[in-house]
Length: 204
Image (cartoon, rainbow, N blue to C red):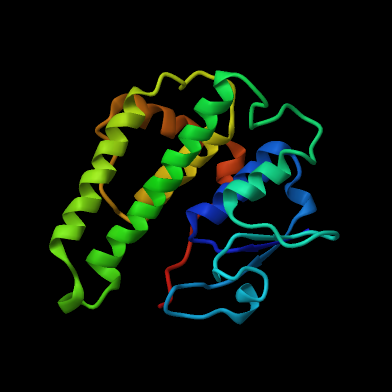
């Protein structure tokens, strides 16, 4: 399988961390692609009409995107314990945490547009402040989630990769939330995270 990837995407990294945790990363050929709303990548557009990575190309079947769907697919092709619980409240907790983590990264990307990526005369201060408020509220919520010692699931992977990207981009810090920060520091030491470091910058 081929994974269209980007070394500075929290979403692409989530899929690769997931593959590492599932023990199937060696089945993926990783191809880096630069993508941006202002920089068209025709190779990625050929597989995903949104022009975004990650995209998973399988030997059989249509391409799969985005990271949530790719992780769900990967969870069906390994022989170990599933990282997306199949039933019960643990399933909904895992999927909710994944959704919050995805939203955190998306809000961080939006905040970067209003602080460093958009030409300065076009930046909107009220929108910047609104995004910052959402990020801080999300950190507060993550600090209270009672799942830090639960068996590893997709929500944990999404949370760790989103937080790592927030720190990588020097966005508002979560390090003053002690439980969240302690959990993150431990997760960062996992082999799956060490094998997938973030690098590079966005090209607009």
